[in-house]
Length: 293
Image 1 (cartoon, helix red, strand yellow):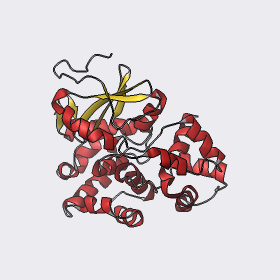
Image 2 (cartoon, rainbow, N blue to C red):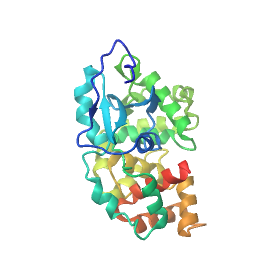
Image 3 (tube, rainbow, N blue to C red):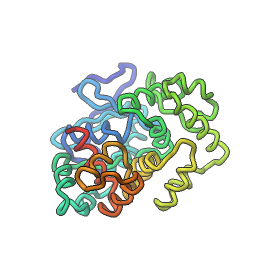
Image 4 (tube, rainbow, N blue to C red):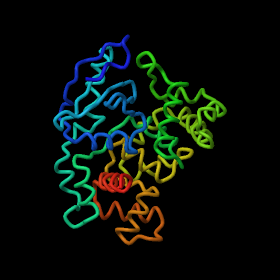
């Protein structure tokens, strides 16, 4: 087994996620490091990730996802990891409900990535990460998020920091944000932090709204357009009907579904109608399949 990353912190023994999450090592890597989240890294053969106040390592043994955490935070990690990984949802009927029987492109993607699911991350944190993602590739987004955590986030265990919450960001200047590698995104995050500071509980209200209203409200936040709103709602609020459209998905929908020349919102609407109430999961299958070739 890999050695614990910090000799000062004792780690628990490996144990399976409960309820069980079954997948291959390749699918686990795509789940946590394939564009849904940006705080995972492969370290000595295992995946180490951070969200909220949690630090955890994951690996697959005999198709079962196993986890361990620093002993001092293991109880709260154990409580939160089933929700984070979607283990508390019954995915078999969700996969079956997708139109894979009549959709060859989707069927091919689902065959390539069996067991792929949608993460359920803290909503405010997800909004922040996707505000950092505009016009950036995954490695750059990960670097920005790591820098924000190191400079402005609270320490979870020695040397590992959480992302700053929005209340903390309210006290960070735009200049400081730019120095963290955010570029023009600093302006949006700075403005969003002031917007949220003036409306306590706003994100919690939006997260609980039905999808159409939640998306409309979320797009009132500075810097949040349709794609960022859909990503935040899909990966942070569990709105599986959200259908984010980026360059990859736009290309896929043109190539396989005849939508060449369609506007982004038209493509998103088609996706929600064609794939149904779990359109966001279908999107992730297609995205992963195209991105990985």
